[in-house]
View 1 (cartoon, rainbow, N blue to C red):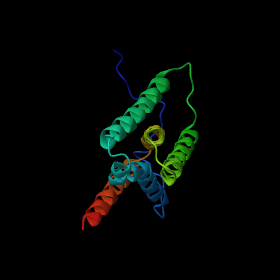
View 2 (view 1 turned 30 degrees about the vertical axis):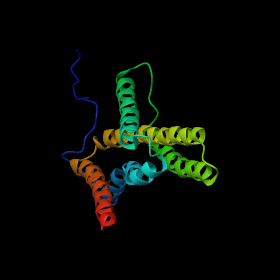
View 3 (view 1 turned 120 degrees about the vertical axis):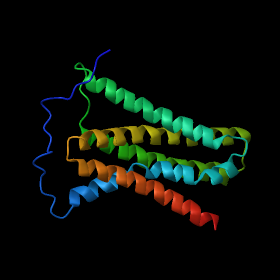
Length: 187
């Protein structure tokens, strides 16, 4: 088994942190950290709605398994190919932009599919197709999360520690917004 060692050629800024006069880099990392959890939160926020639409389906299980398996597959693929000298990964910018586009796709297709299927006479076959499309969009959101999250954390690792803290503070804030919204909806 190969033991991973730090890359001696990687330049870090532990001693000479660049100036972030207006904390713009920190704010951007915070927003990026919050932003890549928002689509997942959007899907799990609407679980009650999807349970109403698909009463015979296990929404929580399907969403969790689909999302996490897709995200993990992307992360493992990124790790595998980052260690491989044969294949060069696309740039961080490309991976982040592709992930954001996939987020937009997933968040647009799911409601449009429900609108099309539930706007007409509902048949069992149409409902099953709509459910498959919905879970596919959750999986695409997981793929996008793997791309954006993995690339963001990887790229931020070369920066001073406060920027990694900003990414995870953004993550935590996105989770807290979901919990706060859930709490408000109960009352």
